[in-house]
Length: 286
Image (cartoon, rainbow, N blue to C red; front, side, top):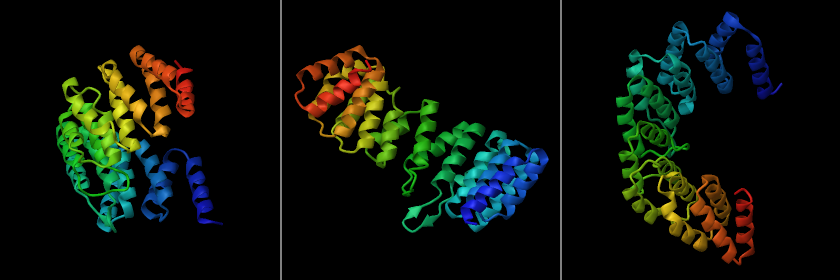
């Protein structure tokens, strides 16, 4: 039997159990299994119990993994997510330790997801500490596979209405593309006087993620109708045809009469068959 088949069989056996029997089996798997996916599944079951006694077992496993460095911190991240529903002030030292955990695998830092999980959990306990750490994480110089914790930091600060750190990072192009896009789309409540800085910098970007983030910002902002001429210019000059149709559909979804009228006028004057087809597809939804 293959390793995948073994994992699936053990998972099905675990899921078939109920109550104390299931929790007891999940505990044994968490402490003794070498199968990453099965262990994470068991941790999820333990977390859903929201038991203080099981929380202590989860923390014990966290400390064990922390001392031995589970690769990529996948187990530690799962444990933090499992105990988040019963987080308490006593967890602050653990979370600070997690948010200061950095481990390298070749050129990449691999604990970004752990720091992100700790950040959300800290936000439940002490939002002020979480906001300060989020502002720090936006400028985290370590390169991670996932773009974390910068993306989570941006979302958290936006949920606080604390846009200044996001704007500062985005306006100086100090983020990787995926985080830059996340930053742009989370600035929909930005003061309108500050928008031109971002539009001037990114409207001509050739990065698809960044362009999508910019249009999420413009179309979600209260002043979107004032950007008709700017958006019209982008449609007439861009060569990014994969995004051409996507942005057209986003405009229709915004229900802005001014912008939809712009698309119709653009369609009437357009001669390129591909662009006409993409505009027609979008306007059919209007």
